[in-house]
Amino acid sequence: MSTPEVTVIDYGVGNILSVQRGLEQCGAKVILTADPERIISAKRVVLPGVGAFVNAMQALESLGLVAVIRELAMRKTPLLGICLGMQLLLEESEEFGVAVGLGLISGRVIPVPCRTLSGATQKIPHIGWSALQPSGASERWRNTLLQDNRAGDAAYFVHSFMAVPSESENRVADCVYGGHLIPAVIRRDKITGCQFHPEKSGEVGLKILRRFIS
Image (cartoon, rainbow, N blue to C red; front, side):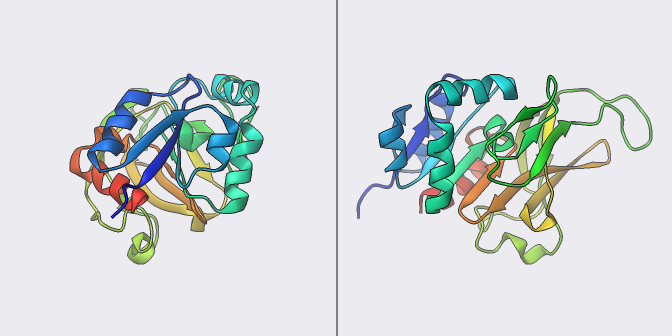
């Protein structure tokens, strides 16, 4: 049986080493690269990311990778966006003014509410473990990267903004913070985004990475 190969886009705006270790723990051969030719020919691609949305998009643009990632989506190459990488999949972000994203999933990146539903001030960024719950019908997790997980499994989040798809069908899982539903996993075709860090979420996250490379 051949070792599954995963290409991680190394564009200087991601926690590359932890993602690499998580994928390797799941049995993958990991290629770290910013080379457009290697990325476009990859079988599976991970887009990590931490920091500011606009900086990440500028980094991808400077490396000639925006068109490459959009081409991956056209080819239906499995693509996993992690944390900021998930947010970049959407059309635009409100962080530091309006910034244009990759536009692979319709929707907008907006701030995590600074107040709970009851009106109390809540800590931003949202940091820590939060339980995942299906968005809509519970069968929505079938044939997704969450297929091996159960409602209530907790994942590790660190974020101040959240990616909100325009279409409910693109929303796979949510978490609750201060009473607000926060999109935790989004999906369209072979594109999936995780707001949390699967590589830092123990066995819950490793199940997601194993499903991605299988």
